[in-house]
Length: 538
Image (cartoon, rainbow, N blue to C red; front, side):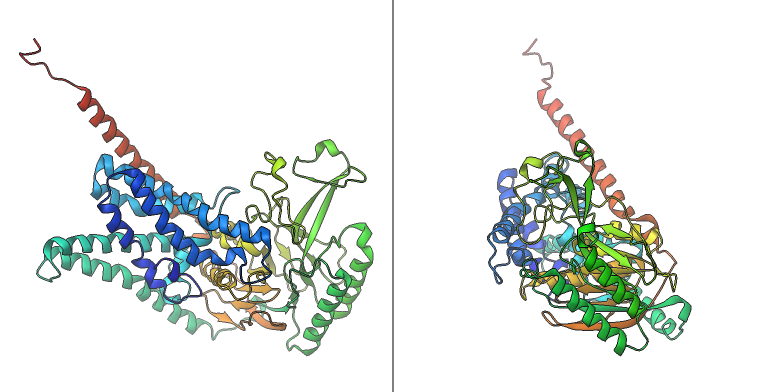
């Protein structure tokens, strides 16, 4: 049920009850080792359904990707030993009721912790299963998507309690407990929808008011270049194709775009380094002709004059010994502007893009995907781009970064009036990865109440408004150009201002509940070791 709650399935409601069967099984298991075995099997099935696309088994059959996908599906379920291990510990030492109360907080604390390190992988955060029901998810402007996870977990716990009550009292409305639990579940499920419908109704009324000073027209190029082949083909040929498509877009769009987006690594080589000056000059000339700035994805390199100052993970040119760092980046070229600001991706896909903590474990550098450049360095700073003509300020998220709620909110807090996402998403044929990644952008739009322009190499490209409505969504593996006028916003939501406050509170509550169980454990141990004086012992 958990697996089939996630995109492209529209049955997100399954997640609200998907953990109940596991809780039923664990209720009759007393040994932690056996209980964790059931947890592993359940989470393994969940991962196989949800993340089967990670191996790319339907397209190209790349050995590295296939192995990495298999490892992800079989090893990542072990991470769920953290919330369930704590749940079982509390149940043993503090009782089943307190353990059930603790489970939602423990799980949310785990999900939050799984966004923080270089091993982070928040792709299957439970709240991500709810993207198709817009009325239900509008409250995340206050809580972030983690609020949806907490809501789902509370429903699962209450559902399990109702199941237990019916075992004792029967399936009858004569039981007061059955009635209370049923009504509570119904109320908790319906309340977000009532709130969301009010919000969406108010937004629909406001949408009739237009202000040209708070709008910008964004064009996008979906080239459908094969990501497996583009690293072998002529980079100059690829750039020429993007320029031709941009020319057509600019000439045939009304109104003319204020900015055009090219997707991730649209330029498949280091175009900003001196040796590739010819390509850069050609691009500048064309951009001046178009009269439209372009944001594009590219690899970027920084060379170290003093090799002793290079981090251990820096790349080395074998012939010269020169050291450099490579970044998966975006750059912004504007007509008549000499400076080219760029942003280096800061959130990496573990192993595929960068070995976690590579500066400490640089000897594992051989664990690098051979498609493209790989082995990226972590970007050094958040960057807000500003378009000269309109003054619009925006951020440029690169692919996987868009699944990090608090990370995205920081860009908005820093001044982004709208969000752009550039990505590839063409690695997995028609499997669920591209569908999931697109849907997750909806949460970022609602959390921050910002328009999103999402530009993918082979789809899905689209525009998403601040309430999660999707416009002009392209098909997979099609070539397309898009243009739409979207809104610019400066007001900040509660979530944008305060980030994952709810997750931090859940983490604190989890710590308190675990401490309570520890106290109970030590009390029980002390009592078991105490032998009272008796007349016999005297």
